[in-house]
Structure formats: C-alpha cells, structure tokens
Image 1 (tube, rainbow, N blue to C red):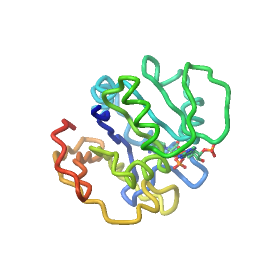
Image 2: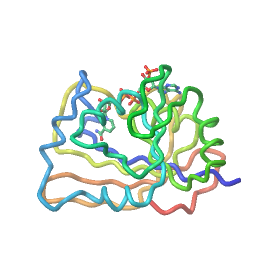
Image 3: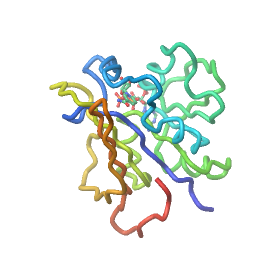
Image 4: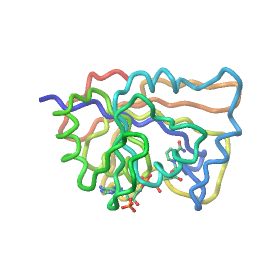
Amino acid sequence: MQRPQCSVYIATSLDGFIARPNGSIDWLSRVERPGEDYGYHGFFDSIDTIVIGRKTYETALGFASWPYAGKRCVVLTHSRPPSDHGQTFFSGPPNVLMQSLSEAGSRRVYVDGGSVISQFLASELIDDVTVSIVPLLLGEGLRLTRDLGRDIGLELVQTRAFESGLVQLQYRVHPPGRAAAPAPV
Ligand SMILES: NC(=O)c1ccc[n+]([C@@H]2O[C@H](COP(=O)([O-])OP(=O)(O)OC[C@H]3O[C@@H](n4cnc5c(N)ncnc54)[C@H](OP(=O)(O)O)[C@@H]3O)[C@@H](O)[C@H]2O)c1
C-alpha cells in the first residue's frame, strides 16, 4: 500500500522561528493583505488529512472558527483532551500513524507543528516543504526543526516573492536511500 504524500506548509521568521518563545504567532499578521492567502487555500484543498502537535492544536482552538473543517484531523499528544471537532488523538511514532492513515485512505497529509514536523522529517516521511519567510527577525522562539540527527537534502522547486516582502520557497525532500518522489508540491 502506497503511503500518503506528506507535506509541510509553514511560515517562519527570517531567522527560522515558527513562534515566539511563548508560542505566539501574532507576528504573522504583518503580512496579512486583503485578497492574498499566499496559496494556502489551494494547498488546503489538496490535502485530506492534517496531523498536528498538541501545541499547534491549542493554537487552532483559539481561532474564531475551527480551521480544519472537512479534513481528517489527528492530534499527537500523550494526553486525551476532549474531541470537539471530530479530531482523533494519537501517541506514538510517525511511521505507525502513517500506516493507519494509509489504511484509512489518506492521500495527502498536512503535517504541522515544529515537534511533529521534525519527527516526520527524521523518519523520512516528508515529501515536500513550503516555507513562507516573513520579513522579520524574532531573535528567539520555537525553531522549525529540532534534533533531526542528520542533514536532509532539499531540491528547490519554486520561489515566489510577494508585495508584502514574504518570500515563499517550495522544496522536494530527498532523504538518503529514497528515490526522488514525483509528488507534486
Ligand atoms: N508559523 C507557523 O506557520 C506555525 C505553524 C504551526 C504551528 N505554529 C506554532 O508552533 C507552536 C507549536 O510548535 P511546537 O513544536 O512547540 O509543538 P507541536 O509540534 O505543535 O506540539 C508538540 C506536542 O505534540 C505532542 N507530540 C509530539 N509528538 C508526539 C508523539 N510522537 N506522540 C505523542 N504526542 C506527541 C506532545 O504533546 P503532549 O505534551 O500533549 O504529549 C508535544 O508536547 C505553536 O505556538 C504554534 O502556534 C506556527
């Protein structure tokens, strides 16, 4: 059984942070522009499943409305919070989760949250990465990746620059030992 394509779509500061030390993403508002979503809705329409860490889940719960409506949502956590939006909870290694998502019919998975992205990268499960660099230096915060254990090669697919100063980079991931995935980004 072919495993689902796994994709990262995330915003960082120029110095590589996804959130302030307290988890705040207030700085993303600097690049909000009417009518410009930086390709997010097109990407969101292409995925059927989202896998997020518990901390990213808590951020999502603070939004005005549940941002993952219509998608299968799996929250990684060692606890068992209430499921308010049909999401399920999972604890364990990414490859075990991916096996069950394959069996459940997932085709493309949006992987989000720095800790979770790092584990999926370390497990050679990420196929493509889209990073939107916000023109800002935070100086401190939560890093996009941690403890990867090795270098991970990336192939640049596309770059786009926007009027707001945001620069978006799309990469394919080529883990050692695996042929280049033909998956679209
Ligand atoms: N800039 C952006 O575009 C962007 C995107 C997404 C998120 N963010 C921000 O990034 C921050 C969150 O990132 P983060 O790296 O700190 O946290 P995270 O990846 O969202 O969540 C980490 C938590 O997930 C759970 N977890 C992770 N791996 C697990 C596993 N294998 N099995 C069971 N549970 C597992 C643990 O929860 P428990 O402690 O409950 O066990 C862990 O504390 C938030 O502030 C969020 O707003 C920013």
